[in-house]
Amino acid sequence: MSDVLLRAASVTRRFGDLTAVSDVSMQVGPGEVVGLLGANGAGKTTLMRMLLGLLGTTSGTVEVLGGPPTRERRRRLGYVPQNLGLYPDLTATENMRFAADSYRTPVPNLPADLARYAGSLVGELPLGAQRKLAFVIALSHDPEVLLLDEPTSGVDALSRSALWDTIREQSADGTGVLVTTHYMQEAQQCDRLLLMSDGQLVGQGSEADLIGATAAAAVRTDDWAAVFGVLNGAGVPVILDGRDVRVADADLDEVRRILAGAGLAATVEPVPATLEERMLTLARAKAR
Image 1 (cartoon, rainbow, N blue to C red):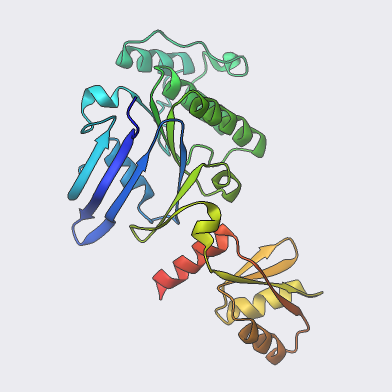
Image 2: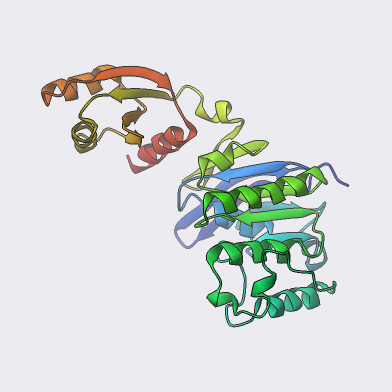
C-alpha cells in the first residue's frame, strides 16, 4: 500500500468570483485519522469533493491511491456525505442492495440494532439509524480510504461514540480516514488536524500546534449572565463554559476595563486557550 492514500497539491477551486478553496496542500496516510476543521463556509466540503473526483480543481492536482481520481480508484473509497447519500423512498435493505450492485459486492448484513428497520423506508428512520446505515453501506466494499463529511452531526452522544469506535476500528486495519467535524471532542480523537478558514489551510498538526499562542481568559463572577451580555455587547469574543465566561483572543486589561465601566465585579484570569477559541479568533479575523 502507498504511503499516501489521498493527496492535494496546491488545489484551488473557484465558482465565478468566489474562491471556495485557495492553494491547499494536504495528505492522508494508511491507518491515519485526519480531522478537517473549520467554520461553515471554510471550504471543507469543497476540498473533500475535489479529493473524491466529484468536483474538478481550478488549479492544482489531486491524487487518490497513487493517481488521479478515476472511476476505478474511486471504487476503493468509502464516502459518507453530509446528506448521507441514502434514498429516502427506498427501504434500508433496498438501499444496501443498490450500493452492493453498484460496487458488485455481496449485500451486507444489517447489524443487530438496525435489523428491525430492514423493511422500513429510510426517510422514516430516526437520524441515528440513518447515519449507522450510511456507515454500513460506506464500509460494505472494504474501502481503503474513508471520507466522512460531518458523519455524526445531529445524533446523540452515545451514537457518536459508537460511530467513532467504527472509525477507529477501520483505521486500526490500515484504512486512511479524512473526517470533517464541528465537535471539538471528536477533533481530539484524530491523529492529526487540518484547520481551514476562508478557503485556506491556516494550520495543521496537533491540537496544541493549532492553538499556538492564542490567548484566553476565564471571567468568574456571581452574575455571569450580565457579564456575558456586557462583553458580548462590547464586541468581545465570549463563550460560555458552564457558568464561566471565557474570552478568546483576550486582552485582560480591556476586559477588566469594560466590566468596571459597567459596574460588574468579576475575576479575570488567563487560561489555556481551546481549539474552539482558536477557531473563533480566526472567524473574527476573517470578519474584520
